[in-house]
Image (tube, rainbow, N blue to C red; front, side, top):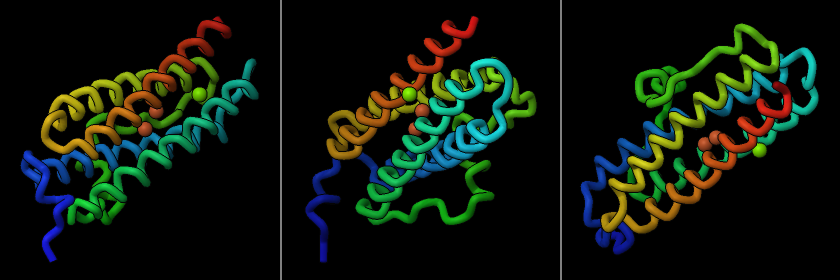
Length: 159
Ligand code: FE
Ligand code: FE
Ligand code: MG
């Protein structure tokens, strides 16, 4: 049966699904980067940093869930294969090759700044087209801004 919830969208639904899948790929890579960062981070302020990284990992996983649910609601398919995360990602993945607190935190700040840009652009694209995706993206953007703020504060505490 035709879905009114999809019919009210003024934009190109396929295009919206594509952008949401790109963001979903970003979120999985961000999740793993934080999840692994929490495990491997070492040195002075290790515990404080690990706690923050662990909290952010949980948030990124929550974002992935929100995006996947919305993609399905729009009639799309969430990216099916992890190998496609690398093809679709906007922000990429930064391996924590140097596990010292400062480089790990800096890598994640870079990731958050990329995420803020991506969600800001997505919000502009969705505004007046798809109010539900727009609302979701704003709520994710709010979290990413908090993440950036937390990590910059952490870095300033350390330095
Ligand atoms: Fe996120
Ligand atoms: Fe984040
Ligand atoms: Mg935090």
